[in-house]
Length: 341
Image (cartoon, rainbow, N blue to C red; front, side, top):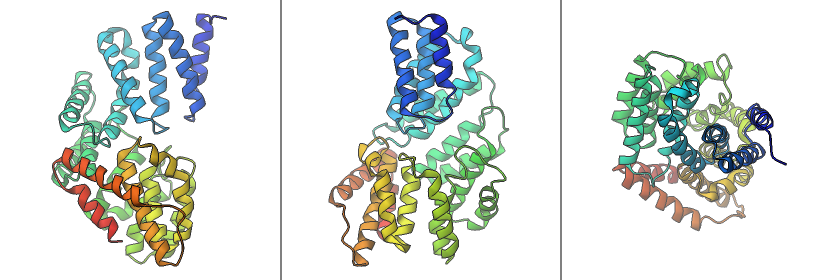
């Protein structure tokens, strides 16, 4: 039986109203998308694709995000006058794209530069602050190992005004925290740690993403008891999110150095998503962490129930691909650093 227009939009609103991203929600939106395409109703198609983007981003299905964004961006540019109510919601997705495109070594620098130019021009055209643009240029520089650009964009980001498209305070503090650990400025990180861990500022992903960043720095400083407590508390927030590969890898490395047997459970929870290859950046760090865990288990007299030969080969390939794309040896040095643990 064919849906009426009211039934269609009621179903769309019901799916969009579901707070948690899920494959059930995604499938429901795909069903509506199929109907829109059969009806050749481009506005319905835009709405469904928008909903899918908001869902797959939180499921780690980044190729789906890229494909739907390309279509939606074309539709938006062709119909800007009639889509003014969508501007902020749609422009928010530029930030997700900026976050994840960088993590794909197959996306070359020229294409990344073109996307970031579009990002900047879109925000400029509507008079929004470039604070999110600078923030994501900063994050891009961190992920590609360009310390000079990271500092340059950090200063531009911090100096820019906040507006409705800026990240929430908690997410911005998290970005600062990660940068100070990248530069080794632990004294600057400390007050931010306390702010985030106290939950004085929080959001849907913070402090979830905070705990794992503290584990190895705390271990290096001899704060083992605190680090162990944060490992237990922090992993609770991400154990059911298999696509949090970077965070899971940080938990694995910490456990490899402290309680390697406990690291096996973390490995098992995330290995299927890692093996899918949907996030090469996260896959690299996850496999490298698994290699360290394997070695520490053997050193402790255990017989690991997982092999690392293929992981080693793939991690080396990913590192080579990133270094070729980025024009430096950052990922090769990351391999050496992790191997040395």
